[in-house]
Image 1 (cartoon, rainbow, N blue to C red):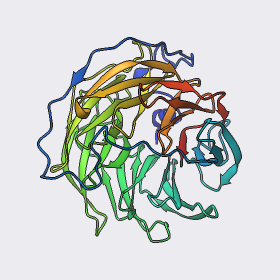
Image 2: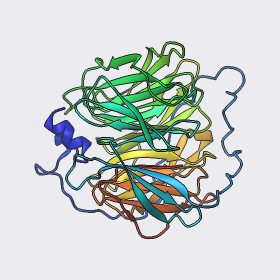
Image 3: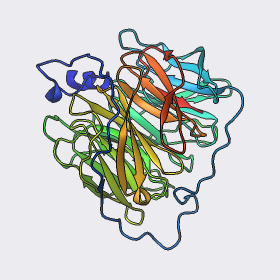
Length: 410
């Protein structure tokens, strides 16, 4: 991975977006904004008869029951960064108050910058974001490391588990490739079954090559999608569930230089929301479950008011009514109302995140709390989520965690 790519992975923007030759470390405060332009995309092709068995109609999901007692929260970091952590931070949070308490560190996993959990809740997975990239499995019952497998690429920055629980999907940022690993009954990983490098289209403006930034499964489970910042493309693949191999079925292209980073689906399964890191925009995308084809809509604002900003990640509430976006630079959380059954985003305003450079955000399983991992301030901030109005209210003082880049609440 070159110097520019390493800088980007450590929280500095691509050199093409720097102002005056260097990245300003000023901390911006997000100010509440009025409603902004509303942009919708054309409805996708009609889905096959009958909704997927696992899908909920938007707005009908019953309110999740808030658990009692502390719940686990795992925090990823860069162990090789100055002032970074020594592994995966082991913490807990109170579901009622949002207060976080630390209980130690799981050492032995280098640069665990992104985390995911198996659908059965028994195994934690982490990327090893290094030149010789890897993915590591950890058994949560006794916190035993079950082993590490090579991703076949450099700088893996994202991973997810297929809903079947049988396959781990990972994205190599440095080499612009995506990988598949089998998951056995114990949660351990087998040897890689496929590796695909994004060779077309050519890199976008200011990019020297492909940069796969995310690899996830569509809500219906029929396709897996890879978001590539370097080629301004979202790739749709068919995953062979018997062999663990990938077949490309579609490509969706942003406008040149958008730099797509992260895609999050609406629970209805027909729309998704894309955060474009390089040009500081978001977009509503229509999704056709039958073909796996994504249609990317027009760029929309992030609430950054035109300042230097790099949107990082969307999360969507389980009832499909609201979406939240992490803004790095503006250091805010943008709030959106979701309308037209998922086909439209309406910007409600922004809330200061209470930290510097929110790299990743996550909702608690019950949807009552939002966690933000703030890379440059080395903190995790927590917010109470207003389920009715989509408001965010601070849950108190930030929790200190060195170079916090991923917070995973269970």
